[in-house]
Image (cartoon, rainbow, N blue to C red; front, side, top):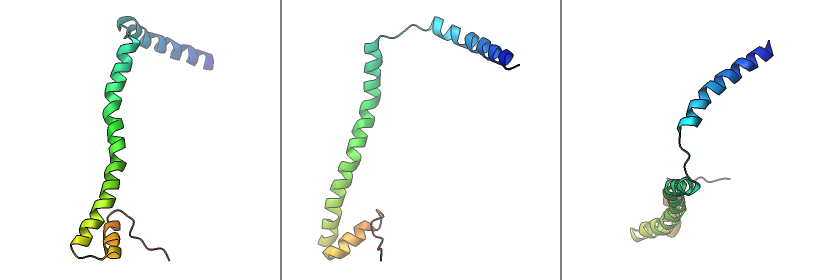
Length: 90
């Protein structure tokens, strides 16, 4: 019985894959690589920018808070609360 099930699955697999493989022209490797690069570049740039923006934020926000009258420790604490760094562990 399991052999019959396997044969049925193979029949449907073969029937579904043949038209797709036979009708679609193959792309050149250069075209595929170019498409991958064009898709991956914005994602890579965004992933590089996220920690860079975080570092700039970490440097600028406490300075601006200190200019408004917060002390160094208060500014650091005030900056840390929205970012999840304000928890005190005892």
